[in-house]
Image (tube, rainbow, N blue to C red; front, side):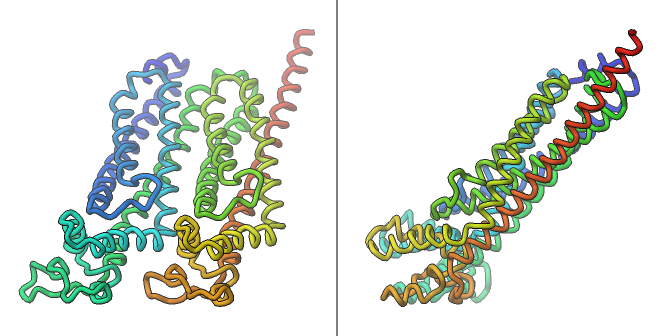
Length: 441
């Protein structure tokens, strides 16, 4: 990295780049330590025997990124500047993904945690002679200082005449009984750590992203064929706008993807979430590649602007006219279960939707009454056992429509701003060419 800095024509630029590189390394080091430390505590909780309720292990993901950052710090000075920035951008993307996954898991973890914890206890209840399952339950209850799924009453309702020994505090004089259930105790332990990981990953990624843009501009802008300060200022502004857009697009797209993965069929021909994430990644790649020539910059930015307008148009259109589509797809999921109650896959989809969106039935609990069925357990909050009175159509619509409007508005707004910047650069370039031609004549 520093070899490239030495070839820069100005000592002033060299000094600034060196200082910026040191700041980068300090920021990266702090981020690496935080991710590895908190990731280890999450891995410790995840290793107690409770099945993972996220797509990937948040703890292992955090540790892997932290180690990767540490490697970058050690070997960053041994590689050329473009390679260094490329890997820095890749780390930035991984941090955004980690932060999005962790924060999404904390915002909608009630149902998943309940399902995962209950499975551990039910497996033991159905086979109490299995020593491995008994050990897992004992470890969970002792480490999280809890008893049963939602309290000691779980063991009474399961036909046990007495509570397991692990339900009692072995360190207290009177062997006090743990009154708290393991669902709430596990949530209290894991949720703050997920929030910390998510906040740290996204906060450091944002700072690191702006630093990448600044570093690229400071070290490479003088090699770009710009003829005036206005060219450089507009290019710098476009860099920053692209970085902000990529960050917002990936974050919003990830939350939409999370909603789309809960079992409700997609209401659009293409996945808005996947489209937004892909476009955000493409914008990040553009931020990296645009440090070479303005011609390449124009060629790569114009398709992004077109895709932003397309994404914005689709998302805004769906957000404005999706009432009947959402009702149809949600009702189909519930009707499939009602018509084939023995199908575990259909039941799991309905339970996941109701717990994730905190809803009951298609348009309310009356759906189950009209179908001649009792309310499923997933119609109740696993925190305070309250019945969800709102239907899943309105809850899903509230969740998705707001995000679709945000993606649509942000994409179109950024596309118009970037188009204005490109047009301004083109006009300035023509003026500079005309001035140069007049001087030659």
